[in-house]
View (tube, rainbow, N blue to C red):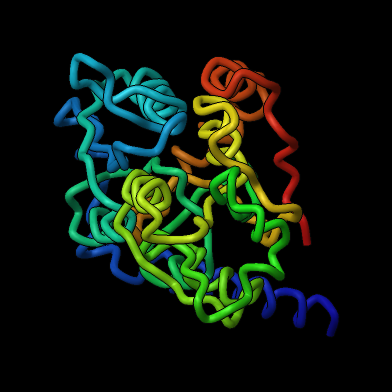
Amino acid sequence: MRMIVGLLRGLLGAALISAVWGAGAASAGDVLDQVLKSGTLRVAIIGGNPPYSKMSPSGEPEGYDIDIAKAIADALKVKVQFITTDIPGRVTALQTRKADLTIADFTKTVQRSTSIAFTDPYLVVSLQFMVAADRDDLNTVADLDKPEIKIGITRGGTAEQNVPLAAPKATLARFNNEADILNALDAGQVDAMSQDNLYNAQVMKDHPGKYKVLPGLYSHEEIAIGLPAGDFDWWRVVNTWVEQFNASGENGRLFQKWFGYPLPPIQVQY
């Protein structure tokens, strides 16, 4: 009897996996085949999010996420084509098949996973609040929890869900990218901005004494590579690459190159 139950469970599990990965497979097509035949890997990125990605003086993208994309292309022996988008466009680029991958400081969430797929994470970050250093009235997150306080967040980012949990009374001001939020903070259009702790650390390093972060980390966010839904073979190949990238030390090397300090632990927390 136990053998029969076990067999039924196995068949049910296989059917469930097939249903999940098969959904949308006809429209998604064989991404791996297309990438290899065309000789080009199309990667959606966001351009103004250093040190993850930014535009160099020559107009070419560079950064941590950019080097990751180039490394995947090298492993597949194809060239990489970058498609610059904004925060909401990271999902859309995959849904419309304009991109084969999204590598763009991209948090893996259940909501996003209903329409696209994700690899295992290659980085873990946390939400943090940053304000101008001369704001003596803003020293804790509790100081932000007022209707008259405006917090800049990225439209379509995880801060839309997480900031109201940390400061439910604050007013949210939505922007399409991090650079616009930082400009708004400098101009006094917002009182604070919500971004991951690694981004904030880089901004403060680049502009000593101009900003300060408020104590506390307010989320656990697994940064992963996004893929079109419904193509198990493509996910299998890219996820295997991520596993090896993490285990080989190559991730640590690239992170050190762009952030200037060792890669934080990537262990998934439950």
